[in-house]
Length: 235
Image (cartoon, rainbow, N blue to C red; front, side, top):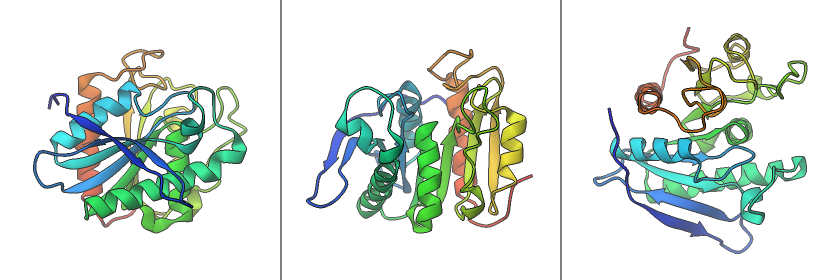
């Protein structure tokens, strides 16, 4: 499958008293079969090459996609998130999913790269109705070189099926570590292992742009995974 670039439009909702939602909305050419919110890693924003490539591919398959900047990134254009703002980032994801579901009723998925995926999974643990499935790209299991500081404490609380896409040389967690972490999740999960890819899921450890083959694998696998509402952890 080769996805051509789709058109997107700026999206903003800054209702009084609510966490703001900003990003870019991709609308399918026909009726949407569902929605997907995608967000970024700690050092980036919603224009990350991986998110753009996936949004183009998913919208070509009928999903409405919202590439969303997390609240910390809306507040400042550069720099990593602060631990004290993580709860607000999760609230932003929950609200983004709610807004997208209002526009495109149907099955809803939420996902993100690295920090964005971690916050998506934590938000789903806190608010199980947020999404029907999770897409976790390069999940940061631990800081590089610090396997004794796992970021999986909420995994046992997850009730939302999750598909992981992970590079074989990702310094934030090995494939073996991710397989072990998946066993902590009491609902269905699956893993796409991308040989030779690092944290950006590119063809080399430092590449930030995924190959067309990688994008196709992720999209095909996630659509099949998200379409299966039943089942337990996938072997």
